[in-house]
Length: 267
Image (cartoon, rainbow, N blue to C red; front, side, top):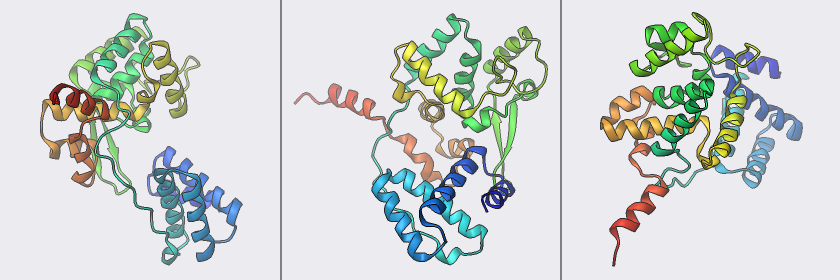
């Protein structure tokens, strides 16, 4: 059953992370509730609400609904829970911290991790997309990605980063293949990246809460809008189907809001 579900997910070109997450949700459901019935599905949803944050609840619900599609029982789909959206962004690395971070890594000749955060911040890549980058993509300056609906999205590599990465790969005598490899020559993992970034944040006295792979994607979006105010283009670059998803980047972070309040309000 799990194997069949994973094959179904793979056939829809979902990412490795999504497949792992959805499979976990199905295993969790089966372990606690067994058969697929309307009553069990409702109990599972209530249990999720009692034990997890709304974001996680909706992620698990999406997973189960996807499984219901897989077995042709869409009439049993579970409604997601409503979330109260905040009017600010949370836990996004600042441009100043990013510049400090990359300079620390470069000065310590930690070039693998220097380029990890450079590519995350300069290409808006998701972690699963970052790990697909090869030397060949750096040479041509872009990586073509395909969504589960077969839609093409191009991940551009800025010229300055492209040239710097070419020089790095030349020193490593690497002319082809995946770029982000560990010391054993194997592709680094998404989990490995997340853990190492937290460790490096602590080492360089940066708040670990703002140092995680997706934070650099948020940084890209905020910085892009600040320098080139075209939200429609940003939506295309980010791969957002709905421009409303992109509008969150028009908001300030909570830290930015606090600084503005401190500066403006003197009464």
